[in-house]
Amino acid sequence: MNDFIAIANYSSEELQELLDVAVSLKNEWKNEGNQPIFKNKVLAMVFQKPSLRTRVSFDMAMRHLGGDALYLSPAEIGLGKRESIADIARVLSGYVDIVMARVFDHAHVEELAKWASIPIINGLSDYNHPCQGMADALTIYEEYGYMKGLNVTYIGDGNNVAVSLLHVCAKLGANFTAATPKGYEMPAPTIELGKKFAAESGSSVTELYDPHAAVKNADVIYTDTWTSMGQEEETHKRQAVFPPYQVNAGLVAEAKGSAIVMHCLPAHRGEEITDEVADGPHSRLFPQAHNRLHAQKAILVKLVQ
Ligand code: CP
Ligand code: NVA
Image (cartoon, rainbow, N blue to C red):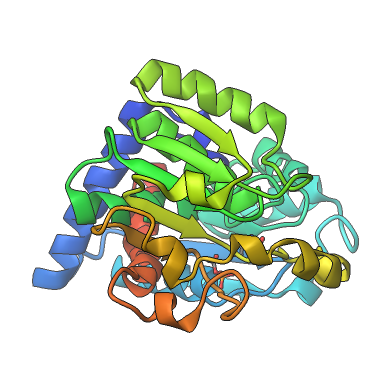
């Protein structure tokens, strides 16, 4: 594993191994604390968009492992504007040990990886959010003890978070169903890839428009914002389309009684999810956010091994 750019790039075995490492690092942290295996190692965190979870969890992950992290704000390096991505990648390669980048255009994180001689981690792009996907899988795995055969339903916008969730589910054998409004489906190539992975793992991928049909028999209900970062000018248009896709108590009651509700956060309470659900007994929103820390430690360790 040289970089961590998209879930689709890794085999089921590699993803399972990452999960196993995440579980063991989490246990180690809870018991005696993590070993300082990253002493003198530094992660540069390049952000083109705001962040709470990604920024703090990567910084803390490095500290837990005895290393350090540098935050580079959206205004700071002007990825591809102040300086070319190829030049930034080669300069950072001489200063730090790993780079995590949150970008608008997925091609930009790929470009960083192409030119850097150190590992590059995708901290969210318009295509996917692989670190989130690993934290999501860890959360589901902790809840149920397995992924194979579970029914994971994504409700809402067919966005970057949905793509990582689809691919990690399909790779690890969970059945994935998405219910999106017409015009907001997941990109066709990501569905095709998901179907290929699902065929290999013996699971299924289903695309629907009806959220009620989608949550039937769900073990996991997942939602995300209706308007992702960079799409702000579409907010009003989307607010008119998405209300039937709100994850509220009525919709959750149509899933299995044991179903858990997930959201990558930040949540727009009262839009894609109600307070009642976000703060209710089915919610795993905060353990899920906390698992970013442990999933990312595993990614960092695998990349620097
Ligand atoms: N889920 C997530 O990536 O959150 P941030 O945007 O706060 O990093
Ligand atoms: N889909 C959201 C996820 C934020 C973590 C976005 O891209 O803004």
